[in-house]
Length: 228
Image 1: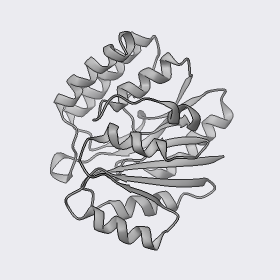
Image 2: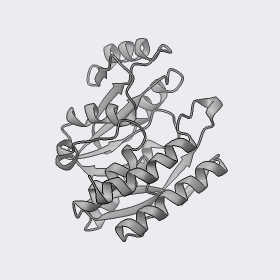
Image 3: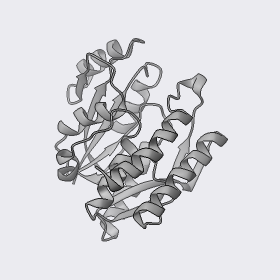
Image 4: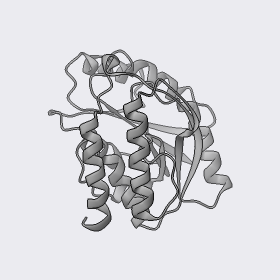
C-alpha cells in the first residue's frame, strides 16, 4: 500500500524541516510526500526550495496567494497518487509515527477510513478553549450524522486516495475538517478511531485556528449535512 502524506504549509520556517524529517523516518510504509506552500512570507519558501534539491522525491508546490488550509489541501490532494491519503500539519503537534497505528487498524478492521483520536489517546498543552471547542464540534457532528466519534477535528484522517482525489472541496480555510467528515459520512464510508498522541502549541508559537473558526465550523457542519 502506498501512502500519500499531504503537508499544507504557511509560515512554518521553524518546523518544516523537522516535520519532513519525521515523516521520512517512518519505517515500513511506502510513502509519497506532497508539500503545498500557501504563499508563506517568513522564509519557508527558501527552505522548501533547498529541501527540494536535497530530496528530489518530494513533490513541492507553491501558491502565489494565501487562500487558507482547505484551498491548499485541494491542490495537494489532486497531486497525490497513493492508495491512501493523510494530512500532516507542519507544526509538530502530531507524531508521524502514529501512521503505523492507523494503517494497522485499516488492515485489521473492515473499515474505509481511520481517524486518529487525540481524546482516546494522549494529549498535552491543549488550551481550555480548544479542548471544549473540539468536544462541542464533535458532539454536533455525532448528533447530525448519528455517529459516535470522539475527535472530529483531528488532523489525522486516513482516507482512500480515489475518494479524496474526486472531492470538490468548497472550504478554503480550517472548515475543511467538518466538510471532509460530512462528505465521508454522507458517502456511506465507515470510520474507525484509534488513539494517537498530540502535543499542542499556543498562539505565540504559531497556532492559527481561533474561536471564530470554531463558530464557522458549526455552521459548516449544518451546511454540509443539509445543503451542500
